[in-house]
Image 1: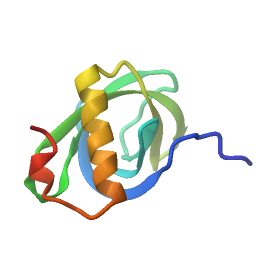
Image 2 (image 1 turned 180 degrees about the vertical axis):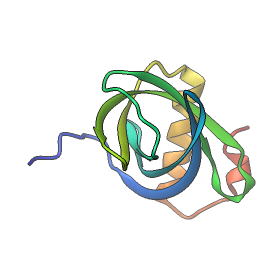
Image 3 (image 1 turned 90 degrees about the horizontal axis):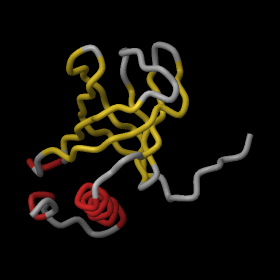
Image 4 (image 1 turned 30 degrees about the vertical axis):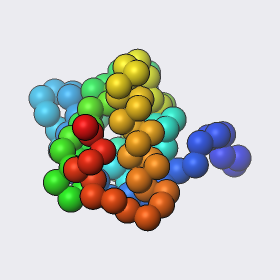
Amino acid sequence: MSDRRSETRFEVCLDAVWDGSGHLPARITDLSEGGCFVDTTGEALIGELLTFRVELPGGGGWLELRGEVAHKQKTVGFGLRSAELTDEQREQLRTFIDYLKGPHEPVKALLR
């Protein structure tokens, strides 16, 4: 099977919550500008648009994003494709991705 993603993916372990039937806990385990994998026992439907918040490491606050469920693995989680991001959200995501790429500065400076 080929990998259709065009963005570099980063293996991460970030706490998150997403809006489904309430605020559901999750963990983001794979992140790129194009989307992420959400490790959760909560159920989502393919094509569903979700809002989720990712807790940045080191007390850097929360990054709020939106995504469309692209695929799911029952009892494991689902893949989200970034969707309907504001310019500010897209810039914050890019800034965090840049942080993941290189020598790490304090994360608190990311969301100014």
